[in-house]
Length: 222
Image 1 (cartoon, rainbow, N blue to C red):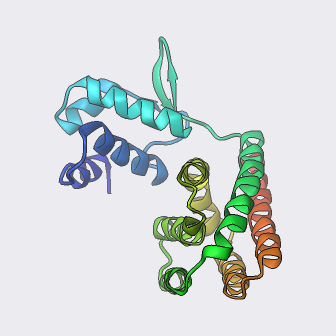
Image 2 (cartoon, rainbow, N blue to C red; image 1 turned 135 degrees about the vertical axis):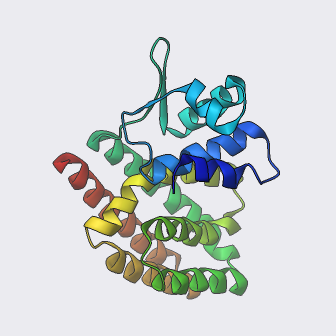
């Protein structure tokens, strides 16, 4: 798949043009179609989408807010580079925010939520595609946090996941991480089923910290 394919897919959806373009560019970055540090020329992107530069500029601003794109006054836009130090900070923030979300969510979790999370894990067991696994990983966590009823908190957490997602995909492929991650997911889900907030928080924090340590090590080596 390339950017033209992604553009064709998203333009079929009923959303604003900047949002659609942001979706396609985000996925292009996640899939490695656009590499870190690569320049993103607004005129070329506008031509591919058949639009003016204005919605492209707005889309790039969305991606800048998510940390995926860096906008320079005289050099235009480029795909952001995630350093080991930045990854460490992101994972530290993730740990704090997701632990809070879990603490708020567990007392309100319903059987339907737990069943949905279980189905997501089963679906993850049936695919080896890194992109699908990364999306399912977020869906699993988001499903457990949703009952916290803290939309701003979940938006912040989602943006942190997006920042790491392209590298998490590499982890899953190159570092044989998925099996360990799935095992930890099942442990977290079991603690949630038992309404054991203390155990769920401990397992979640370890899960995020382990992933963060592997990600930082990968970035330091590369």
